[in-house]
Each structure stands twice: as structure tokens, then as C-alpha cells.
Amino acid sequence: MKKLTERIEHHIEELSKYTATPGNGTTRLSYSHEDLQARNYIKQQMQASGLTVREDGLGNIFGKLDGTIEGAPSVMIGSHFDSVPNGGAYDGPAGVVAAFEVAELFHQNNLKPKYPLEVVALVEEEGARFGGGLMGSRGMTGLLSEEEFKSLTDKDGISTVEAMQKIGLDSSLPKERDSKTMKAFLELHIEQGPILEEKNISIGVVEAIVGLTQFEVTVTGKAGHAGTTPMDRRTDALVAAAKIISQLPELVIQEGNGTVITTGRLNVFPNGANVIPDKVVFTVDIRSGKEANVQNIIKNMHELFGTHNQNGIEVVAEQRLYMQPKELNQGIRSLLKESSTELDIPYCSIDSGAGHDAMVFSDFTDVGMLFIPSKAGLSHCPEEWSDAEHIAQAVEIFYETAKKLTEVESE
Image 1 (cartoon, rainbow, N blue to C red):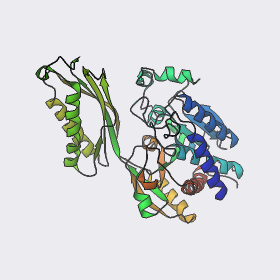
Image 2 (image 1 turned 90 degrees about the horizontal axis):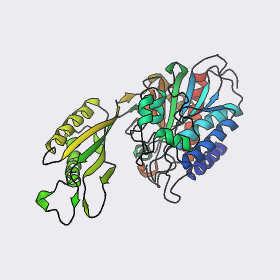
Image 3 (image 1 turned 135 degrees about the vertical axis):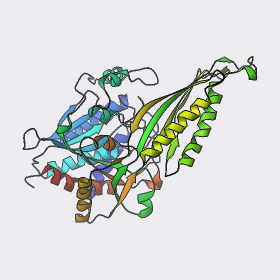
């Protein structure tokens, strides 16, 4: 256990070096120079554990230990390795590190599985560069089409295909994967909230993941000189956007049931100190455990936007992502709980308030997910921290569970 914990600490530390903002958290956007550095490190670790490594047309990385049954579906373990700007070192990488440590235990113990074991490192879960999020898993499962993928651009107008090319990735490789090749998907993630720490329990077995939707809202007005345009002649897109944004929280407070709404990104054009803004683009993120609540908020939000479509202001909302609430596979949940009990590791059941790649895969294969505590409940910031011992416990639970799912023949 001590060696495993030390290895995990080392991997997390190494991956945290691949950031565009040294000393100010992890900034690792998909298909960036930092992505390439992390990618090379992940592939090296996979190879060191005897896995056959490949990448797909999205840039997802796979390390496979073949099974003895020819053409059998894989038991996949993994998470994502991109980050939000100035994020932490654990959100995503903890799950990738846990996955290749499970593979390393298979390697060390010379296990021969009947069903293949496959370590997966996924791109653009956060959506920090190309928007929407969950791109690696949505592309793999066909929820993001080839045309949609190619049309995605970052804030500088660089397309996914161009960005991949810049770091030597081949976007023409196959992207979609037949669900028949996936027996199960396991993901470890930091909780990103305070519950496990408050309960002083190191493992949470995730029962369900909340539903979420994201919109990109464009408010269009008219530009003008900040000094020469009278106040009663202005069509200020930013003033209109600010009014809308300030009214959004009240919609979910009325809805209740733990429903939340966030405007996390706002871009102002032309963004000059002495120019009246003619366009504002902002995001709206809505989450709830019940789909009816999400639908109600969407309806009320559109009504709100309609009340601001006046006096030369135009409000247009485009839905960029929609994920229903997902209950995870009962059989896998039972296996994870059994393994925890056998290892004498205390656990509790927990729901996820954040979206994860696991929720995408849950429509295509059997999915199980573990959470470990986040210090002070913090995430998406440089202060994000989780205990490597807790990751090691999750690795042991996944190792025992993966042995059962891959039906290992020898130990």
C-alpha cells in the first residue's frame, strides 16, 4: 500500500508539471503543448505496464491488455486529463493514474484476463477549449458526430482538426467505437464537494449523476462611442446581458430541489473601454437530479430572454449540451461495495453533482464510479487536493472489481 501511494503521488506530481500556468494551478487545454506533454507521460506509463497503446481520431488514449477470449469486449478504466484554466492537479488525472495503477497491478501479478483490460485517458471533458464538454466520451459513443466535431472551434477560431494537427495527432483515425467492444467502464474521480470529508469516509460509491444542460447565449445590441452617444439613444448589449444574468438565480431558487444555475463565461465585444458593447456571449449551466426541474428552468429561461428582446436588443440561446440524470449500473455498484467490504475499506453511497464521462458511457455499457474526498470540498482551483492514500484505496477496490469483471485466469 505504501509503495502504491508513493507511486500515485509521483504520477500526480509529474502530470501537474504540464501546465500553461506554473505556480497558479493546472491549465491544460486539449491539444495544447501541455496536452502533448501529459499525453506522452501517460503513454509511457501504459507501455511500462505492458499495455498496447493507441490513440483514436479524437485524441483519446487507450492502453490495452488483451484477454484470452478473442474479440471479447473490454473492461475499461479511466478518466480525463484536460483541465479548466487554473484548475487543480486531481480533477481527471487522479482517475487516469488510478487506471494505469490497476493495469500495473495486473502486470506485476502476471494476471491473464479472459476479457481485455483497457486503460482510457479522455480528452476535453471540461469543455474549456471547445465548449460543451465530455467531447472524448461523446465522440467515442457517436453522440458527437464527425461533422459536429470538425465544426468546433476555440476562442481564437482554431478548429479541433487544426489543433490536433499542431501536436501531431491524426483526426482522420476512427472516432466512434462500437458499444459491443465495451463490457464495462469504471471511473475514479475526486468528489469536488464536502460530503465525504465531513463524514470522514474515504470512498463514495456513486449511485447517480445529475442531469445537466449548457447554453451559449448571444445578446446583440449596437456599438457606439462611450462619450458622444446619449444614454437614451443606446442599445447596450452588456447592460441587457447583465440584467438577464442577474435574474437567472431567482429561476432556480423558485424551482428548488437542489437545482443550480451558473453563468461561468462571459465575452464582451468589441471589448474596448470607450466603446458601447454591441455583442455579449455568455454561458448558462443548469443542473438537477430531476429532469423535470431542468426542463422547467429551460422553459422559464427562454421566457425571460423573450422579455429582453426589445428596443433593438436581440437575445439568441443555443443549447450546446444536454445530459439526462443517470443512475449507474446496479450490478457494478454491488461489485464495488463487495470489494470495499472484502478489503475492509469503509464506504458510503453518494450522488454526483458534477457531470462526468461515466454518465455518457452509462447509456452504452455498464458503468461504476468511485469518489474520494476533496479537501475542504474545493475543486477547479489551485487549492484542489486529495489524499494519495484514498486514491490507493480506490485502486485496490478497482483492482478486485476488475479481476471479477475480466474473469482473470491466474494470479
